[in-house]
Length: 249
Image 1 (cartoon, rainbow, N blue to C red):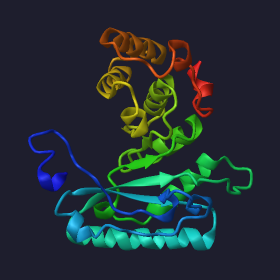
Image 2 (image 1 turned 135 degrees about the vertical axis):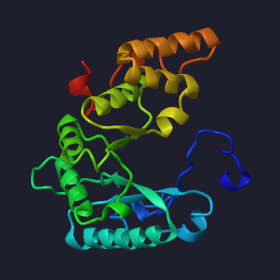
Image 3 (image 1 turned 90 degrees about the vertical axis):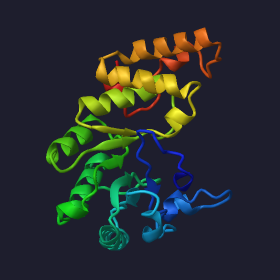
């Protein structure tokens, strides 16, 4: 799309996925997600840089010394090549797709420490512009967002589609506890009206619109446009993501 000038004359910054480790290989019948990821990159940075100056690099930590060291070494090599070709990046940190042993410590706190270890010796010129990660609750978000707010901008990924209330709550809680970026895919792409959903997301952040009120406003807009909602208003007002529930009521 970038080479076809799809973003010309628009206030849009295209970004390219710069690695695709095995934990996102979702082939039909595949079992890759049941195993720790192996680093892999389809993208050649010299070619990617011709289309965009920004890309996404993803990493997952498993609390396994050898696996995590392999991940970190691959990320180090990537940063060196990215700097050589003038490619900026943001860093996506996945939660493992299966349970890992963290000795009773909350997974979100383990992920926070893994991130700070990952970036501890990284020079400013090669640091990620911001993070994209799973929302692991208020304690983990507050801790990480306050760790180094000048140099470490924390953002969240959208995850599963969920209800419309889930979408607004994730956005509101992330901002409330220090997050500054939201990168939502399915929550927007799968919405009945993506444009109106994004407009209301802005209202939640910029105007302080309550999450319940935002859901009601969204359903009212759908009704006026004659668009059928996938869920009833009562269903869509529910918070279904367990990590969001403690702060939602």
